[in-house]
Structures are given as structure tokens and as C-alpha cells.
Image 1 (spheres, rainbow, N blue to C red):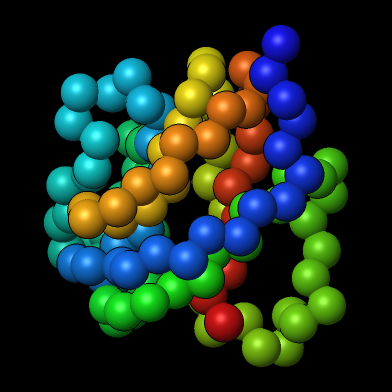
Image 2 (spheres, one colour):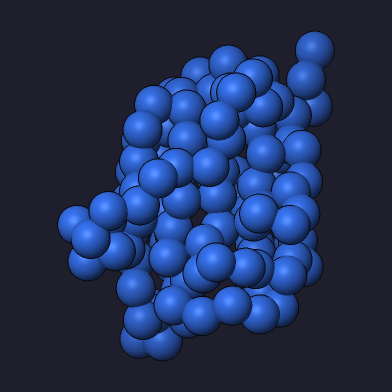
Length: 116
């Protein structure tokens, strides 16, 4: 049985202005980007989503599993994107140079990407 994730903070070096969330079972983990994807701020396909971070560098990524999305800092959000995401096992979060594997229970999730 997989342990429930409550909260995790990752410190990652982001390159190519993207942070990705993808199923570990995918062969091609990182999405291709078109001009339309850059305009909307993300690239999505089943099993993988990549978000534009607007710049490269060191980022702190907070992963919080909860039933309802709320943030106390809503006036500080530069960008917020919501996408559906189905988990069938292990996912990975990170960038081209570095990812972190996370075990989640199988099911349908919603990812809220907030850039502060």
C-alpha cells in the first residue's frame, strides 16, 4: 500500500524554463512546446504536464495533497494553472537535469501550478 503524501518541499535547479510532472512509466517524459503552449504557460498530454517557470534558476516546489485548493497568498500569485492528472503509480516532478520520484495512490487528481 502506498503511503499518502501530505506535504513535500523540493528544491530544484530548473532549466529550459520548465517544471514537469509526469508518470514514471512514460518513455518520453518531457513534452514538446509550441508557440501556443508558451502563450498559455504549459504543455499537456495524458500522463505529462510541463509548466513555464518564466526563468531558469533555483526553485522551491511545494507539493501538497489536499481535497480543496486554497492559498493565503492569492494576491502574490503571478500565474495559476489548473490541469487534470491521472496517477497510475509513481510520478516524477522536476526539470531536465533533475527529477524526484513520488509514490501516490492511483486515481484522478487536479494539479494547481502557482507561480509567486
